[in-house]
Image (cartoon, rainbow, N blue to C red; front, side, top):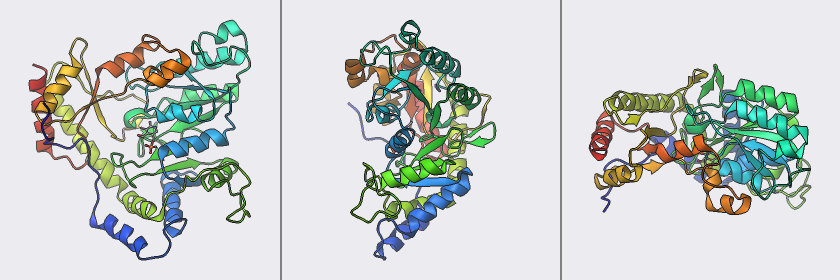
Length: 395
Ligand SMILES: Cc1ncc(COP(=O)(O)O)c(C=O)c1O
C-alpha cells in the first residue's frame, strides 16, 4: 500500500511576481492575443538568439506546427527516436507521416547520430532492400515514401549531438526539428538548445524549468516557416485575413494572455530557476555515489550545460525496478519509470508491428530508468530523505 508522498514528484517555482503578473492580465479585457504573448515571444527571441518565436498552448502543438511548416505529409518518412515522450512521434502520426526510429546513445538516451546518418543514406537511396532495414514491419510503403526530416529530442534536458545530425540533414536535404521541450536553458558546445536545428520547441508544463501551466514556444530563424506557423496557430488566418477568413486549414493553438504573462515573469527568473535545479542535481549526485546499485545521469562531452528537467537514475542490471518503486511508494517517495519506449506503446505496436527487442538500447534504458522527485524547490534535507529511502528500498 502506498502512503501519502512526503516529497512531491515535482513542484512549480512561483513567486508573488508571477501571481501579480497573472492578476494584472485579469484586470484588463485582453485575455488572448494581447501584449503578454508579444512580450513572451520577444523574451524567447532574446534568450534563444533566434529571429522568430511563436507562442503556442503546448509543446505538442509547437512540434505539430513545425511538422506542418516543414511540409511533412502522408507517407513521408521522418527519422526520430523511440526514447522520448510520445508527443515527439505523435505529431508525425497526426499528418500520416511514418516515424523511422533509430536507436539511441546509451550514455545520454539521445538519438544516435551515426544510426541517423546510416538510415538517411539507405532511405534516400530508394532501393527497397536498403529501405526495409529501417522501416517498421507494417504501416509504411517500401517504396515511394520520401525522407523529409530528422526530429531529434533533447532528452531529460541534455541536447542531442547536433553537429553530425546537421551534417546528415544538410547532405540529404532534410529539415531538422529540435524537440527542446525538456531542455530550455541547456547548451550544446556553448549554443543554446532550441537553436540547434531549423526550428526548436520548448514546453512549459508545470514540471518544466519554467511553467505557464500549459504552453509551448517555437523558435526559428526561418521567416517563411514562422509566418506559416503563426497562421496555423490562429485557425489558419494569413496576414490580412479577417477574423472569419481562413486561408489555411489551421488550429486553435493560441497561448492565452494569463499563461503568457506567467511565462514572461518566469523567464525573468530563468537563470535563478536553472541554478536552483543545478544545485538539487548536485546534491543528488553526491548522495547517490553512496548507493552502489544506482547509476547517476551521465553527461555527454558535447553538453556544456545540462538544464535539469527530471532526475533520472538507472538501476544497475538485475535490480528489480518495480519492487524498488513499490518500496519507495510505501516510504512516501513517488518515483516514475522513464520512458516506456514509444515503439512499445500499444497503439504503435498495433499500427506498425513493433516488437520488444527492436531497439535494444532504448529498451534497456526504459527498463532501468527511474525518475526521482525533482524540482528547484527541493531542499538538501529532502534529497537526503529520498536517497536514504532509496538505499533502503534496494536492500
Ligand atoms: C520530449 C517532449 N516532447 C514533447 C512534449 C510535449 O509537451 P506538452 O506536454 O507541453 O504538449 C514533452 C512534454 O513533456 C516532452 O517531454
